Length: 385
Image (tube, rainbow, N blue to C red):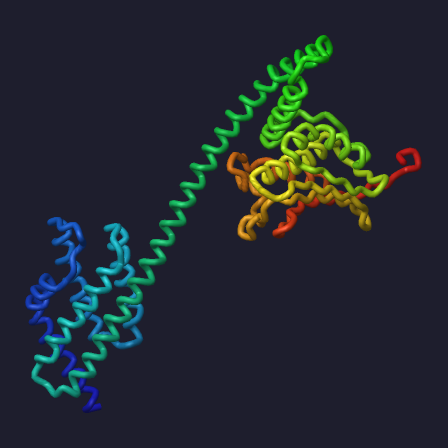
């Protein structure tokens, strides 16, 4: 008990001595503490307040029992972190200045008239106080910073979503109105072909108009303003692929792309035929566009087969490999590997296939990039076959 009483008395004497050195501490603090890069009068006043705050914490912490010390340091360190957040400055200067304050107080401590062995215990205690105070300040500062960043990201995301919604509404309205004159132009092209069958370039004009109509259909389907009144029916996938091949033939011929087909007989699926056609055309157009810039032979290979209760249609092309980092997001909106792509075609295609209770998958190697459509095989009646 006599030893405990002696240490308590020595602690009081040391704290009293250091408090008498308060003005000396503040002078050295002003001299050695690191200020923010921008030197303003308000910054200097804040530095003085921080020095007083840190000194007050250290003196009070020396007198506390360990059971109360942690909560005291945490509470005040959190307050210091909030100040740094409000100042919109980094935590590095605070850590440096806390360590500087510890060094100044320890220098003053060893000027106290007592044995060095006894003063060493106070030095260790001061190190413990300042190190933990610094740790709690940095931890809370980082937590507050992360919270602010999350709030800012939510705000940015919300604003971005609002702009996308408005842009989508404007685009949908524009594209919807654009379809009417396009239909008129297509009608007159058909009249010209009927009256002047030898008129040059009509096939090219008609093909380009069909492709433009296809792109418009993509936008309208994405905005969900397309009016689709067709009911789901059972149709031949073999016939649909032949129709698509005829539709894309002018483009294949122009760009010297070889289209190979390997389909089992009597492949049937149930759904909206025009929508499935759109998916197949979109996948083939994508393949054509990515192979244009390559020096290798341009080949599209379409394979269709039945496996269990599903119908598989694989469209492979010899275009460049899709990077592994991109392939997992290839069906997300606005993600594209093409310089002039919109990043909407595959997104719309997957929506269509999933609406038909199917799957649209992608795999890519150095030799082939394959898009696989998987659709449930319908139950065929004798009349349907």
